[in-house]
Length: 404
Length: 136
Image (tube, rainbow over all chains, first blue to last red; front, side, top):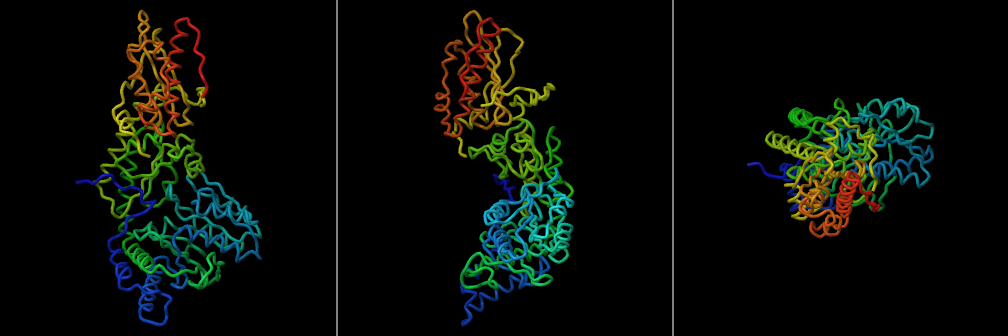
């Protein structure tokens, strides 16, 4: 029996893998020690759990365990990476380069450093959501201390050319940071091969618990340091104070281990399901895939259905938990800035749905989702005066709409 | 957002979706809203000229559940009313009937505009002056 609603919003968060919970349980009960307590076995046991997690994480992204700084999640990691570099390297320069489709955790942090006297370049993206390497090259200056470009986009799944970007950053003496929130655990990430100096990621996007994430900070070639944004006991090599969230960290470690062992199988299975979902929904006329189809995370597709209004569409697909590019439930009516950056008109951005599959998504759920979305779009179009006008060949852009 | 049962009912089972022949002299058509604002309503009335009574009403709406429900409800109310009675429909009656929250009041305003716009179109077709449309 299919349980409704069906969860297809795995870019927002994933369910906890039962094997992760199992690994965490002892640390929520018996092994409760403070990992910084050096004087007794309670502390030692906690520290051992943390150290093991560091190794599990390091194996996934091919780094040294000492290069992992634990945080409360990707937002904190993005803040620590950007603000920490801005402070630490202020002697060298004050210029940061990022792009317009970054997560708010990066964009708003960049806005913050602008207030502190930083200069930030926001690179545009093309219709596939990719930045231009030539534009990046042109934006580099001797004052550029950091290039921060996300690995995979949360709304469209678009994967940026990370290796080429890091090469350009390094050739100008800047550090390269990436927000790996959606990519780590989903596609191969190798900090050395990819040329990553700093990387933010989080447990709850890869079947781990909420409230725990990490910042990878390179220790060799070059040795990178970030200024702590939280003062206190000097944990995490002085870069992030605060008692370690031991059960969360153990969960993140286990999630990384499972991701490493099961990534290939998950990718194969999910991309087949995702492609089937997309192919079926694209049989609806006037539907458009948003972002690159070629350079994309394997479990994501974002599709706009023209002539259907976003909020009405969300109401029509009530049996699915998905995200829409429409933010009009808040009175603002402001559509997704990511989709707008790809050049989508407001109405197409509003009428988009983001599907994010997970390790736990089944073929049966995808079958249901296909039927449910097709039915909702068809019904709403039959009710839509714009759809009728489109079918009559009327150019909607030529109509003088009464603004209200 | 939580929708009222009445909004959900009209959204799930919309009344009077469709198109009347706009070339007919006794059919008035109102098209209000704009795609970039997220709602477009087209409301049509067919009038029995002898009695000045609305004998049929149809709508098509591009918009959220509240916009669809407001226009669906409007067509239900219009049928059987005289044109003058229809003119007296106030958007706040729609708000009350559908229990629309404050952020959705504009849907009811749009429905009232659509009614007036359809009546105005009918009047012009029949040699009467257009209605003064209030601008919201």
